[in-house]
Image 1 (cartoon, rainbow, N blue to C red):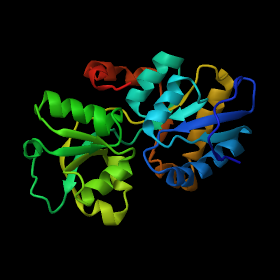
Image 2 (image 1 turned 60 degrees about the vertical axis):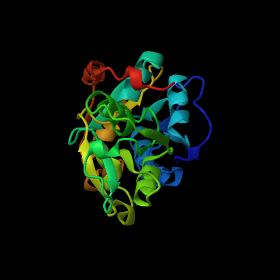
Image 3 (image 1 turned 135 degrees about the vertical axis):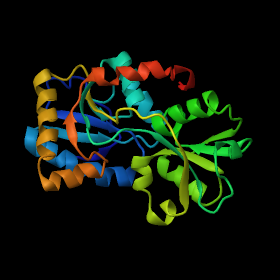
Length: 266
């Protein structure tokens, strides 16, 4: 049975039948466990392997984990994937074929802020510096397109970003549509979007290069099989992954052209 664990990957995952999975912490740990535990149970049933979910309280800790190769499998944002592939040879297996990833800039619904220019000198919350849509794409646009001068605050998760803006603690916040749609209604209903970034392919589910090809293929096949059932579609939609399709690493090469490396924070 999948568990939320604080351990790291086994030293020889290619020959073991227990594998660790790292999940980018867009939400609080309890919520992530509620979303992913039933999915991991389905993967276990389909593949015969055991999967343990590795807890990363903050996105920065998740980044340290995949850069060090601590995860056998992982679900990460597209720019994370570029870094992970270069550092550890991770390979894309599955992604959502029904949507694209883009950043949204939200403000309190009752604020007087109507456009990006109104945020000059204001404070903008972000989950973390390297959250792709919420921070990397957003900060690049605010800088390159709008020339905006503002104060940055990093609040660990997308949920915290939305809550801080809804409560008036921050003037605006960067997020993505997927997490905004999953925000608590009492928070989401107090927000409105004033800006959207460039769109890119969504988060991939990836495998470390040490994973045997037959194991990686079995996991990919299991994901797609789960997505073929109504119950499985409901489980994957909570990630959110509305239409699971096979992914290739080459699909993410277009992100290099965005030149986001100047906004990445080690």
